[in-house]
Length: 196
Image (cartoon, rainbow, N blue to C red; front, side, top):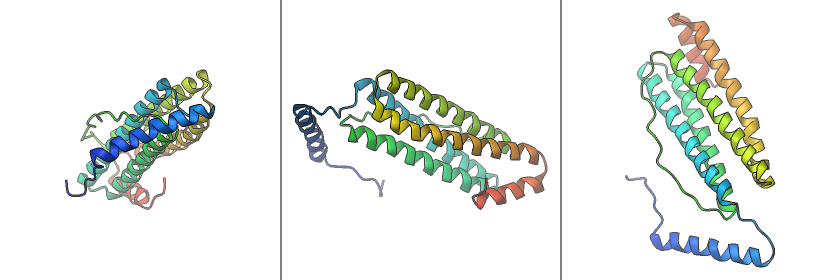
């Protein structure tokens, strides 16, 4: 891949070595910034879920392009980018807490839907699933008295309220458009302008 970037193995080893040394220094100072393995593993799984969301929404964007619904495609592409931002927020947090990354394979998303309504139904259901994952992660952090992680997750709880509301609105509008090609194209045009 032309635009692919990889750190040399020596640099990767140096980063891991630095993290290990820094963890020991902080422990000597009585500062335990290290994230627990259980929380770290759960966040690594959440990163995978966020990246899958981005894949799913990019796949939907491509589907909408093939249906000549470029406004919906743009809307989905924007949501895919947002999911990547969420994954990076978790990624940076784990590293900031001296954790270790364990990136996992991302399952392939579907490539076709029966209709725009079916696609938006899946978006809404998927956002509900992500909300449940975030809530479970918050419950885990609370149980482990990891208040730094709780603070991070509160941002995601609020974000999911917005995500579910936006996707629900789009689904309901798509249902209202129904089989009316004119209404569907008007909604597509509105979505392309970034209006939910």
